[in-house]
Amino acid sequence: ASGGYEPIARVFSRSRFQRFLLEYDDRRSGGFEPLRAMPDDRTVVLGLVTTKTPRLETVAELRARIDEAARFVPLERLALSPQCGFASTMEGNRITPTEQEAKLRRVVETVNAVWRGDTR
Image (cartoon, rainbow, N blue to C red; front, side):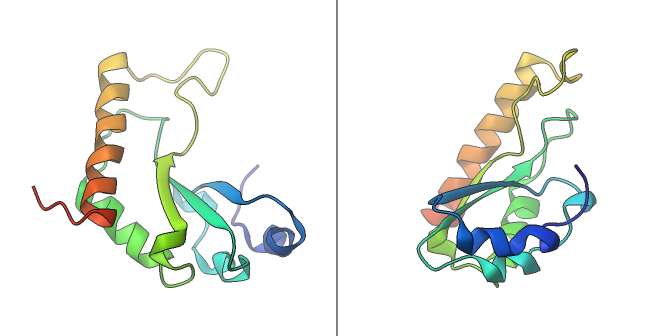
């Protein structure tokens, strides 16, 4: 699938899911505007860390994207994750175990910085 979440945003309120894990690691996912349709009792897990390439996102980049999403859903109802598993195709993605570990560590660093105020 490709394109933003606007065409399916109405599903957010009809669903009984408590958490939505949404891919937002590239432009094809569109903006965060569809999140305004998210009911107040739901959590949005932002899949901002790509598993498709070895490029390591910076904490600043991730924080900026989280801040952008927080314009539509309060920060306390947001979470962060990789956008998908590291082997999301039959062949897997061209990303080494060391690069995968670095990406998971970056998720932890960003969570600590954004939600726990860690400025290390």
